[in-house]
Image 1: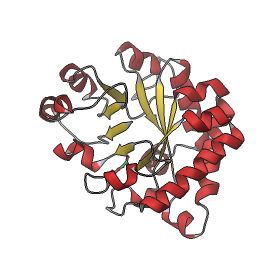
Image 2: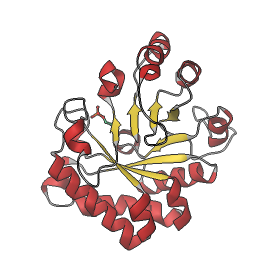
Image 3: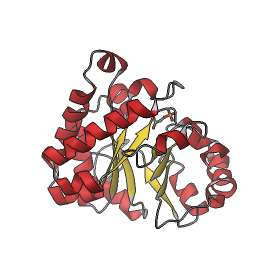
Image 4: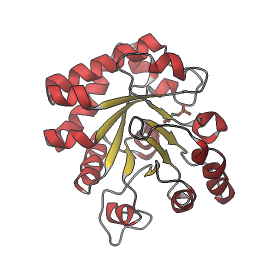
Length: 239
Ligand code: PGA
């Protein structure tokens, strides 16, 4: 799977031109690779209308609430009504800038899955946590919150996006070895705490300064099953 996360970027013209110029020209086998693009909620329907079927459009977030008096939110029912099948949850910017807790992320993940969606759950450590040897502990804590909400079977609709926070938007990509080691730990955690089947089938994406310059050596790693791309997903290099 390759996901593009536009974050809070883009405008109406871009939401029309990027599908036409980049997304619709991608050459890939949809039986082998899922390509997912997550524009802002404002631009989602424009991107949807201009993108061919084999690229999935995703939300970057969803509400903990249902429909009702929740100003500024959008519910999973609305997302589904728009024909959207994929979403991110737990992006580090949601966690660190908008106060989402492990529990919020886990409940959002559950709400999305119970409503038939596929979820890219983002996890990952801060620089200080990496430097003090806490990476595996942080990933395990974030995953455990999700595991507490989901049944084993629901992991079939989960993709884990491992995004070390120090690598996001910094140009400091994790080396293939560092990323591989951490992905292998995540897979072991899934085997020990969810099931062997989940460990074998859940895709683990790497995210954090992925670009056309480093994607090939990262994807060569055994436990890296794809990418979640931020900055480079807004450029023709998303190809
Ligand atoms: P980046 O962002 O590729 O710009 O580092 C990745 C992400 O936040 O998903």
